Length: 353
Image (tube, rainbow, N blue to C red; front, top):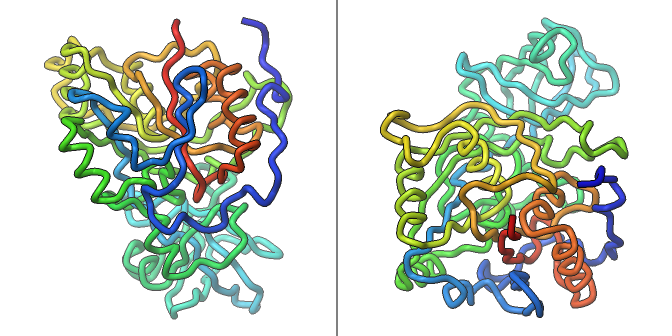
């Protein structure tokens, strides 16, 4: 395969197509059926008609935390934190914005009345992130005093509607600073309709980091290094995938975070050796999926429309083939689909190996 250029993943997007708010109803978002040709315009509520009894939908059950916090340095200068993760010892790791970075030992006074002690850089002395100790339990403080970490292309301050809609209806494990956006289209009625159709369901957990919005900076795509994210694929999900594939059903990944979780697990275990694993596959993943990657377990992908030149667009192109994805994006722009986190979705089929 010839070397990939960043320009291969570029496209012109009118700014007005970037969705600033979600659709009035989750499953009323548009769905581009891009499994082949011709492309078909649908809505997400039609998904049960596109799947079969015995298919398996795999979701990411991570929960978005109110990770954006504001406060002040002892000097009075403003400071903003975006919490990336909570460590096992209770410290938090965060991106920190200030006119001048405070030094270790500084006590920040945060909005809401709590304190955050800066302990240094993370993961080492030269790290880009900061390690802090909050004066109370981090998740509780963020829930009370934090703000929904809306993506940088959404230009309104977070409100009560964002707290509800920038969260999946089945969110379970707190830890993400960005939503698994393909799953935002599912409501209880759609889940019930899929179950009635005989479509099975399983979960993974991947805590999405702020690095999901990190651009690829150089033209040499292969030189890009992905951020690391925590993930877990439960043994029950591995078993469900094995049963589905053995019975001739299709594995449908809902979102790129689910793809990254399953493909990482596929690199670490075999479905015919699950008894030897004896549990979940978990840890950190920095997998970077680009065209040429050979997918192991996934047959269909439901995903939103992604940023130009992004690693997520590269993953989608790897899954369904760059020409098919380019055609789908041209169609979506022409038909005025809504883009990015609060936007519409597309359904893709894995390209033949």
